[in-house]
Image (cartoon, rainbow, N blue to C red; front, side, top):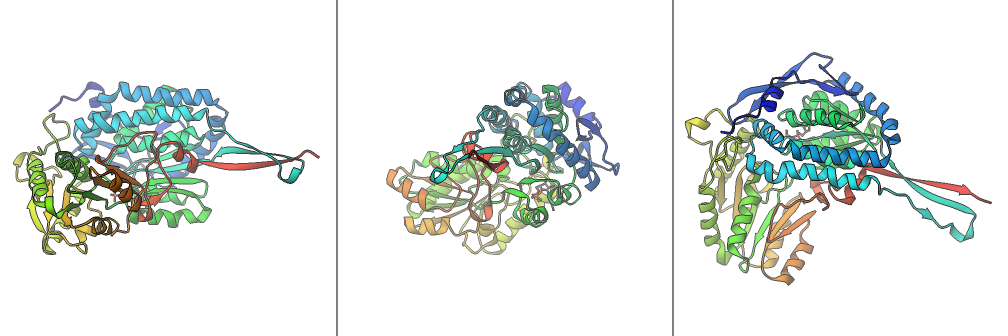
Length: 494
Ligand code: ADP
């Protein structure tokens, strides 16, 4: 097990507060909640439990900071975002330890994805700050008008984020929101508040003006719901489960808030017989089990062409058997615990439904028997075969380390299976046929299609779902649009 860095130990012992207008302080209700290490179930820290009055104060601070942030020159705002990205890179070890402790994921995954991608997001959006431009529009029919557009920030943004990529989600939301000139109230998930708190310290150190980002830690109903309903919040950007997204839609209607909703998925992963089988097995393993399967993009509905199905399943089972469950902080760990006891119980119950509905459980399926892991929230990596499309495990998002493998006989059948879901977030396709690649990629109803790879992200590449997976792209230039509004100005020159 890695020893904790001194700053991490000191940080865990702090009396973390809310961050409102640049000041850290307790919730107005004085309440706090425990932060657990999901690999042991032990309390590692605690955070302030925000309420509606705290949200009011945070929104007021964000509103007050809006003119300050907009009066800050674009060059300076760009510099602040860039410097934040640099500092996250410099503190990668510290952030990784904190996240591994708080969320449970392995350090190796944090160093490959969460931390560098988060840093790159701040750097990428730093580049956009100085390039947000309006247009001049030629007068119609020779009328004597000078017409131009201004790209203005939406205003105060409420960012409500989940526990599966806690620090990274801060980057997804704060990068474009701040680049576009908005101020923010950030509400991290109650299971994983620590890296967002650490980020607030870093933003102050880097020199962001007070109130540009305010942090209200706490629970969904107490802190998230009042933010979603707040009359002085202009936009909510949310990542989380569909039931919560629907509550946010309802809460947002009072003042017609702008919304970006990044919701669930039930992504298909199609493996054709002409695929490179080694790559397909390795890629499918990552598609299903990365982050303990707690990914909205998890490509866990695996459809394999019938002629290679048995060999594919044998190889996947062999790969899964190599998994080393353990705490995220242990260098030997290749899969950590789920984030909470509640999440573990949900996943185990869905696995139980698969067994009850007649799917064949080929490996895993329960909590590990290893006594050293007994107090953590672990679930063994699991593979089902003989699944039917109507089973709960094929229709509901599991958000755990569970693969459902079945077969198809031709491309039409593969596509029908792929699109047999109300979600539309992502899809995987494994084939060496270039014509098939483009045919299938066009026919799949999802916001992302990965071909002969799975799960890649880049700050510059738009990401987001179709259908029940939500709306409002993240990442890339497109992600700026939902944080901006266009004003047209008509000047009569006659
Ligand atoms: P999960 O159930 O897997 O924790 P959620 O979608 O409920 O996923 O959580 C994502 C984020 O939404 C968290 O920050 C959570 O606190 C917040 N949240 C939960 N319920 C609400 C709600 N009613 N209104 C606003 N935010 C909420």
